[in-house]
Length: 193
Image (cartoon, rainbow, N blue to C red; front, side, top):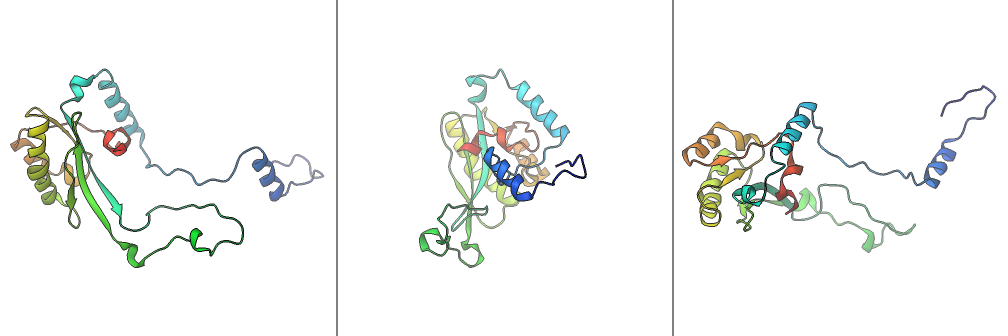
């Protein structure tokens, strides 16, 4: 607040808080999104414009892929509840926890316009060799059976996906890979699946 005169009273923080609340401006946690540089913003827009007029026929041969982690117990994020005053320790308002987080399960999956592909459990931390094994023994047989030989594979720009080792696998197997703009998970329809 700007004070224009030394004789004007200064509004208290509580008064400001009440006025904000009365006008519907409540304190909220902001949505966290990755920072996207101007260069990557331009690349995303260019990618979207290049594919704007594609129809079902163009997208039908694409395979969309990603990895996903599920916690066995609890959440990695903040959890909110609404409870009456004085009920903090009632069991129905408590969030149980376990030591060391309770574990998680990581899976790789894919889908195309025609069907959902298999889920493959990822053991430990996935590296380029485990990723190549997934491509060779899970994705490729499914793709050939469900999409045909002329499929186009989509993956994000994770270093293990773009490693020379994996790029050589795509080259040897004659698999076309969809160019993918950096920092673009929200463009991938698999995120909604």
